Length: 613
Image 1 (tube, helix red, strand yellow):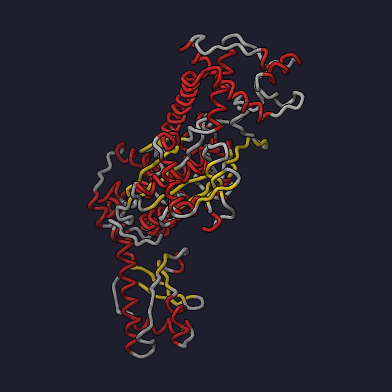
Image 2 (cartoon, helix red, strand yellow):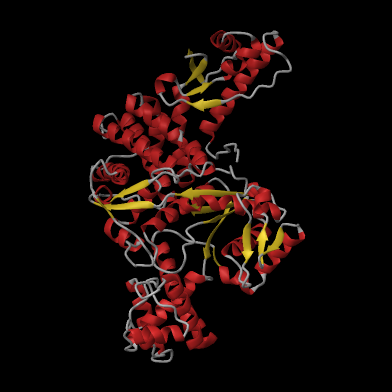
């Protein structure tokens, strides 16, 4: 997805456009002189320099045009510089390395960023890059079979940040959670709740190895007992007994023995228990138990995410796809397009024709639709809603799933480039040197709520998006809770709090703040740390746009760490409340600009900007 930065803060954008215009003028001049071919197409590329010693902007245009010009790149760079029109924006030009042209910007132009920040306030950095295009971002979408764990937390923080960044640059963003409330895992949950409910009724039996064993299942079962009494009670002690008589009775009732019993199999055992639960309860009773378990866990997930700063425009039910005929409609489209065939009693989708490694079953021989059939219908539904871009944020273990979904989109007659899949590695939690194992089925996991309770929302959100989403992440609990410069979120928040502390001193000492006087004397900000801050502040709009368009919130985190580091260095090197009123106000204007940008970025990431620490 290419983009052009259209910022409401014109300083950096106008500088770049101005320099690009001057370079284009120089190239056209060289064409007129016969040094460059008149028909030569030129793409001017201008980038920020990483090292201020190399100026503010740099271009490699001389290196790109050297070969067609039959000149050494440095020789061509000299000719380009000679052909550049004079402009007050440029303080100095240098040729570096094999032929880069470095631009040093007039300091007076850089000072304007302070004025723009003060004028625009909370809007500084926002843009219309997205052009009001409609984007759907689907993220987390964890099975509602248990609480969210720390692994889900990373997807939640990342998806929320991506959606908020896209919105900040002009996209119309819909955030969606796909509720996987159909299929075998939900039946295992419902059956597990019922079995725990039977225990509440006084039944005693070995709980199935492959059931959901967490305490949250017991809590749901206890609430079910409070609501329904013994309404759903059917004694099954003998059916699940470990005794030989019980095992024989179980087999006679089509309940396959569990793992650990003679010829036992945990998968067959839980499946036979699911069927037994349905037979005992009847459709209405089973549906009620199923719904109670689903509603309880889904409500917990919603509360958990809201407390984590994550909200959605829509919670989309997988069962809705089954109930409204969407799955059948999607498969009918594939059938009409010639992509379905029957084999061994099952219906297959010819996804291999469209880039997948093999064909996929969409309806089993028993007539049941597969998870993939639901996914096809869900993506058809997304496409029919008319989004310009569909973004799925999945766990890295779903990497192999991408080709088959893209194949389905093509087979449905849509442009598969509309789908962007972003992968997130699960975070790994450590307590000291011990890795914490997580399994929703066994119940041995650390929930997102527990993590937030221990370290707080801010460190969680900050740490989760501190690295590229596809990179492995170890979550250091000790670091996240430390109040030291080594803790990056503390370091950034402390910079904001330090500015607030200075401003409190201004009030306490009755120092007269004069915004206009400070603006008129920004040229007094000539210290090394001040120049560095001015440069970094001016980078914020383009950093925000780049982070959004590349789906990389860690770029904004890196920016915050750099800005905080520069402010702390400035704080340690200089006094702000000096006797010189002009210099004092100029410095106050600068640090207030720092405070504003820190606050804007932290707020966008849904991380608090504390006034004291």
